[in-house]
Length: 123
Image 1: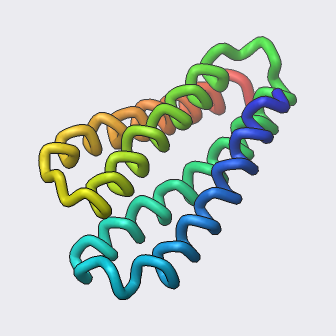
Image 2: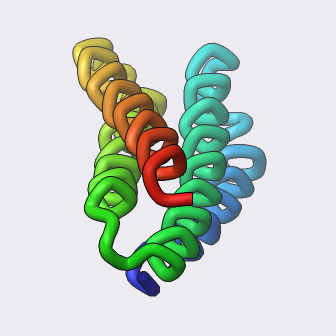
């Protein structure tokens, strides 16, 4: 389904842009601890942008599989919750935002489990 390919490409673009912004725009403004948190958000966003691209290809191959569809939506939600909370935490230093990050991680894990199940069932 092209929506996941588009979302994957958008998130890959954003990961590159946010990575460059972190390296050049925030390097002198954030403490190393918060710059590392920013980098973690960028890294996970790029990994899962690639995952969205793969899911888009899988959905295109096996259109009837709701497993891959759910996987894609969970992966997008994971990017928003995981990487998004890390970006906001980095620039605001509001520690409670760290409580949101694991919810994004759970979305990532569930998404990958659905990819595994979908692959076993349909490939």
